[in-house]
Image (tube, rainbow, N blue to C red; front, side, top):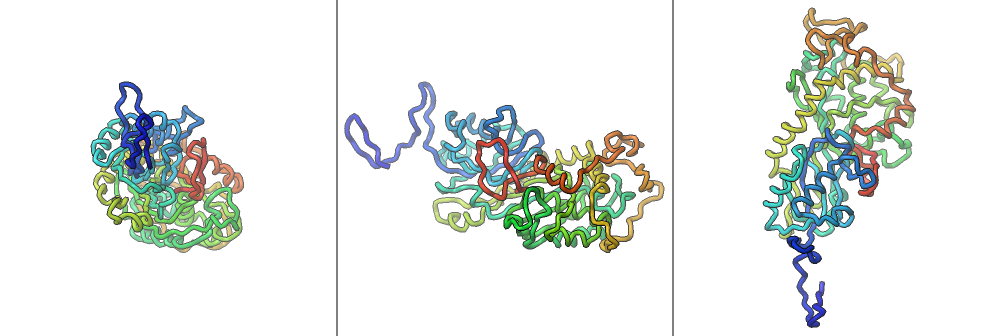
Length: 440
């Protein structure tokens, strides 16, 4: 840009190095440049990722990030009030309680590249302990983390007793046998590829093109122990995910593996017939990673910009994920038994009740006779129960919550804020109060 000095009439082709004149006594701000903010957070204390401009009392991750950026003098206070002036955009939207291990935000920052290291240190000091910034990477002027996101990876942490073939096996001491793990992995593979996930979301019709989604892969980890419970990690990699899609994918898998609904019902769920697909608890859902492969191919090796990749921060990410995100999930499940309580509601769903018998698992896993409980009386200990306490002793689980009919469930899902959202990856208005529609 050509700059004119009015008093002398001098014209220079140099771009000014500072923003508009700072207030008296205030340090000057460097000119704005586009950056990729690589970050992670635990969503337990927040009402989602997105900044709620018209609901000042709502605490969100972006609100805390903007406060931190302002305190670290990376954003001018007047620009922090209007995110559009910062060209602020998240790669994926997450709703209430959902965490992210590797999230990307693009925005303009008043930062020179030589000051990045110190800026990251100051920024993390200003942020709450449940939010971390791994790096600030200088990006191209038109970099948009949402538009350049080529795929998303989600993780769902699930207690292994959820996959037990009978309710009598649903207890804190359950250990997943090899054949159950193999069946779990095999069934999840049936979701891979391009399918119409009309029954795995809300507010869509079967003919809506946006219901067709491509899952690249689904992997299930070996079982591991934490907080006296055995867990598996389910990792789903896809280009994009619809509202509720991940949690309903897990819910359908659990329903079939537990012999609550026949395998034929799974096949019908991808047809135009409206099916009642159970929605698994949102506690274990984590945004694992956002990939920007297209951006890296075009600009990552152009000699001016660094590729936006996660490998250099692997150690930091894993440390934060285990110490903050995982710890919260494990502790809360142990304390509240959300999965155990949810399993009792499955019998209230209007599943297909034909004569087809599931063949994935027919032989229940045996366990010591002294631990065996009556399935009908449901007297086994809940995972979060105290020693000697049974389900019948716990008011919170003595009666299964009533699940609405199929149609009511779909309507109610629209207001559920316990899963991540991002309406079919359309770019939301950052100043809007709400939005959402997909898991990533």
